[in-house]
Amino acid sequence: MLDCPTASSLPRVIARRASWRGGIVLVLGGLLAACATPRLAAPPMLIAQVAPPGFPRSVRFLSSDRAYLREHLDSTVQTLRAAAGAEPIHILALSGGGAGGAFGAGALYGLERVGKRPTFQVVTGVSAGALLAPFAFLGPSWDAQMKEAFDSHRVDHLLQTRPWLGFLFHPGIYRDGPLVELVDHFVTPRLIRAVAEQARQGRLLLVATTDIDKQESVIWNMGLIAEHGGPAARKLFAQVLVASASIPGVFPPVIIRVRGNGKTYDEMHVDGGTTLPFFVASNLVDILPMHLPQLQGAKVYVLVNGQLSTYPQTTPEKPMAVLSRSFSAALMHASRRALLLAAIFARHFGMHFQFSYLPMSYPDQGALDFNFANMHRLFDYGMRCAESDRIWTTLHQAIDEGQRAATRLPQLSYQCPAAVTGVSPRG
Picture 1: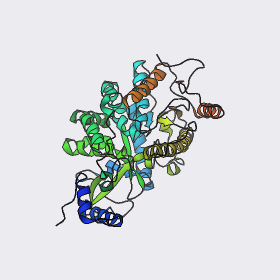
Picture 2 (picture 1 turned 135 degrees about the vertical axis):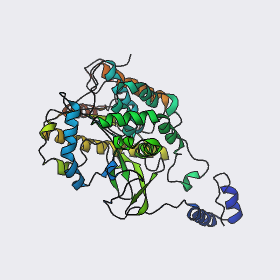
Picture 3 (picture 1 turned 60 degrees about the horizontal axis):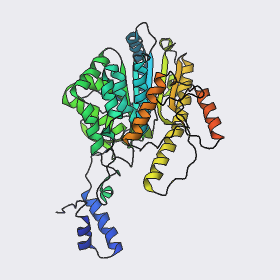
Picture 4 (picture 1 turned 90 degrees about the vertical axis):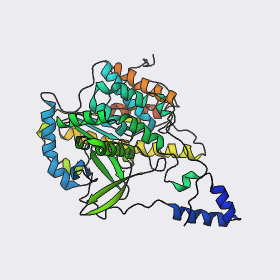
């Protein structure tokens, strides 16, 4: 029987089993193959009738499942209309962006301080936005926890590298322990009960992950999960949040066990931002032809927790620098496309559309900059822009700002997304 080596014992194992470079490669390959933790097979069908044990299939759906959308969209909108009462339906979409989530948290915090944060009937979250989404959904009574999650020293040790060559044995450069612990700290039984109560009032909390076996987005109804109650609900709720924030290659994927047709499978889920930077409508192709008068006058808000363009800079020839810049580039371009589609969706149904983002001129350090000082600065920036009523902008304004900035040398500033000339939000 093979005793699998730990990272600390691996040098001694290699020295015993190989004395030349080629032998080291062979030994490493053999050890990796022998010591890999087996997982069950993934469901064989793209749209499979499976769900986590004990939960109904309705707790999640594939974003590409057109039949599901056709069947449930009208009744869902009617429920939201009833939940909004005499007010317009308010929809908030929170994007990915890693450390940039501090911007969205600060913006929501600032809006509440000046009494301009509505009650959102729908909150959707992806990646960092998924971690923020439960607090945005539950409202101002949870702002202290939201601030602690994004503006405290809890984020300082989020990226913990593995010991010597440990990354060779795991599908992620960094340990998932700190992220799991962060989520577990905030996903308490009290939070689960609070989410369930709001869900019973007809509101929706949705989080996206990416099922990399299917290579598709999965939308999870977190309110329905919470309504299940008990330890199982808390476990699955936390699993989905961790999965949605697990950037591929940076953190290991999350295995979620599902059952269906008398069989058990394992699904591998990673960062929802891999396939969706944020989402307002998960499948516009099928939704747009429909007539939904209940959405007329609804208000859509999108918080992009990152930039849509940046100044050029010389990227250091280091793995983390290249990974961070590549991740940011992919997120920026995906966010631009998603913003355009969201604006088309809103216009089609007569909805008001606004969004916010980090302007090109903000001295952003990247999605993987989980440094407390920088995240505190970002939180404070979002808060002050919201307090001064300069947080929300439009596509035309953002395009004009980007065009002006692109034709100049870098001019870093703390000007707000909808800033008035010459005024800085720094206090």
